Length: 481
Image (cartoon, rainbow, N blue to C red; front, side, top):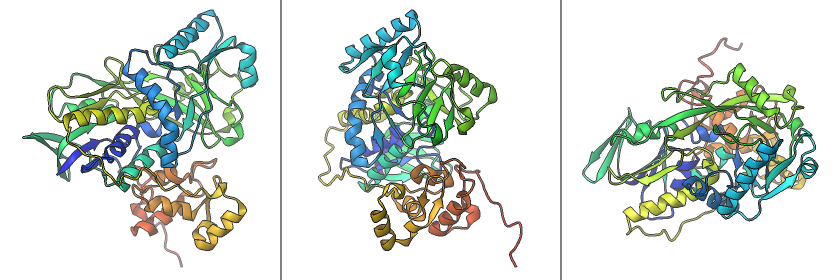
């Protein structure tokens, strides 16, 4: 019997689990896939919004501003890389100037004090590679960049360090109300819990429909992206947006934490039955290029190393849906968490825990809660002296597996054996970055598979790329002499 089951191990579910792990309760995180952060969390713009965009009287607006302020402390505790590089919303004409003024006014109403509307000359000093026809821009210095998948992994790891449990490959197929408790079924397992927190992303409406008729729907909205090689890393210095439209914040250009450049997304509404469609398409990627021309016409697409697509959870009503069910006691919905969901994640977790405490006022704080996650060793960033000392202690750090990113065997082994460790090729890529460079795993992929098989003590044929069915090897083609 669990006190709380959190359904969904994206950045929202894991942030809630970590916040709940501060209390003397039994927590389980249920995830249908092979790993943490395999949905929206792994495929987005990877930015922390300043908080001027969402309406001042919305839950999104309030939680974005609160969440943004929390990131420095959260990332320090969890040893997650985070940089406040600032953002610019570009205006090219009088109508767009009016829009950025409206964004500025909205941000002021939300309590932001460091917003500034700057002229075109200042913008070009800050971003010399963008189009010269810029007239003004809204500058928000508190915007930042992050690796959202690492944040989710860190949240879950720290929650597990503090007693939470993670169950992967647990796809919720049915939920029964049994007295005051819930019985949650997958195809192969069943658990019982007193409370459910529904953080199932694009499937949050389906999960709620298992206990009552849902009063909201979640529609998927797909966005496609280009990821450029680090050689293009000086294209922009800030997160650069066009003026927003009703379809979203627009196609942006931004650096990543690791020195690449992301361009995207477009915005394509899908049907409610297309919640698995993360394919990229030539016509939509060309549309991204057309949209990005508003910001910069000299983008070096010849340096593109991969394209990808992600889904946003578009709710009926438009705002975040974070509330205890009025129909089913003990069920809390955390639904429709589209942008700025990542930016709001720490504040969403606090907000949900406050709801939980209202339902369970006698819950007590855990005296030995440890907020600190052990930092990852990043071999490439060490000094020569530090590298030599580390290799003397553990020779695995002297063997380079990924030449593009200079990732060692020691880093991969560590990523496997932590709480919430990686079990797939992409899972290791998210944790330690082998395969994230120019060759996209062409050289290091087989070695990562060998290390996974050895450390997990399983046949190499059992190692998957990502989720169930993503088989890489099916057997030997020949036997050596």
